[in-house]
Length: 290
Figure 1: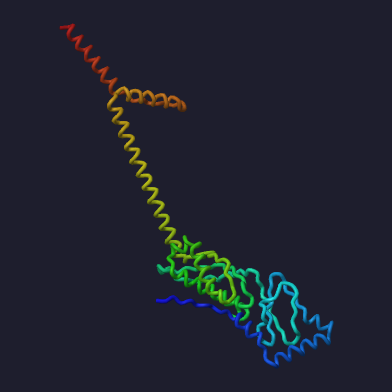
Figure 2: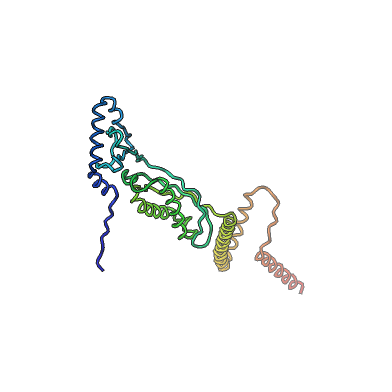
């Protein structure tokens, strides 16, 4: 399939070309206007001189047709009384707070989203000749674009991918407003508000997840502690002297505490030693009498 190339022709180009071909009556009116300016000079000069600011441009129409040469400004420019009219266009960036929009997400959750859009006029001539109200149209388009884009996202994507959503929305708006002479500079998603019931459900889910994680960590710690205790018990069981050293270490630790009455358990090994010694003494006495 052969590729086709589409060329977009903005109205300012065609109107500028057609504006150069005035009819006979138009030329007569233009000449009369020049004569009036000359005859009423210097009073008429005040009607001919106009000023636009640095951030403005003036789009001039002569007898209803766009004057060739594009928008004028900044500074001084001249018009002919009675036959020339002009409209000034502000080129500064306009910030627009998109009203909160109720949007149904891809996973069927109703959320309220608001955003802010920054845009400016990039071509004053196109902004005047292509659309009646470029500011209002851009604002309405921002609302519908926000709903359309967020309607394809899940709730988790809305909450975590705001930067990607803002970039997607800016690209879509910029492409749509290019034919209006408007440039969308930036889009920011300000807030995503959930219903109260959804907030409570998410809070409960997060709390349950935190409790489960805490229990898992505690169980893992107990498992590691039991392994360490088992290894210590095996080590002490292999060496009775280690048990006695541990016993002495415990006594030393207790003695460093505040003064108090402490009942020490009598070691079984020592008790058996005295028992054996007593048995030997008894046996010796019995043998002496016999």
